[in-house]
Image 1 (tube, one colour):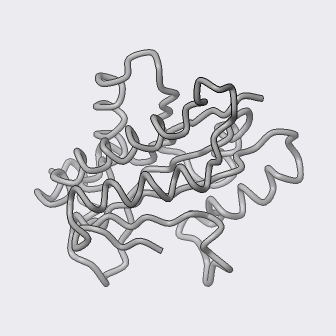
Image 2 (cartoon, one colour):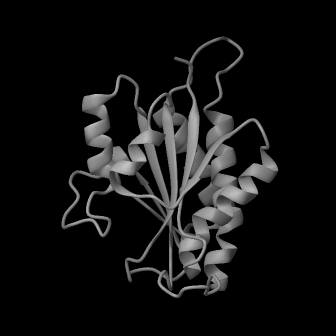
Length: 186
C-alpha cells in the first residue's frame, strides 16, 4: 500500500467552538478539491472505525478543553507519545480504544496518528459562534495539514517517506512559522 494521509475532522457545527473541525474541513476542500482525503463527521467512539482502514497516516482535527491553555492554543499529540489514557472518555469509547480495536480487527489501519486539537472556550452553546482565538487557529491547522501531506508524499526516487520523520519536521516548520506560544507539542 502506498503511503496515504487522511484528515479526519471531528466536530459539530452547531456547537460553538466544536465547529472547529468542520471549519478546517471546509477550507481543506477549497484548497485541495480532489487531492486530499478529507473526512468530516460528528460521530465518535466505535463509529470512527469506518474511517480508519486503508490509510498510513491519520491526522485527526478536533477540539479539546483542558483548562490549561488559552483558547486557540493548538495541542499536537502523536499517538505514540501517549503512554496511557487516564480516566473515561467523554464519548464513552474514545479514539484510542477505537484504534486499539481496529488494529485487532482490520488488516490495514494507520501507522501514524497525529491529533491536532485546538483549545476551545465553549463547546456546548447551541448555535454559538466560535471564539475569535479558535477561529484564528483555522489557518494554522491548514498550514500544518499542508506541511504533513507535502512531506509525506512519496519522493521521485520511489522511496516511501518515513512517516514519523515527515511528521516531526512538519510540526517543527509550522511551530517556527507561527510561534511556539501558540502550541502545546507532546
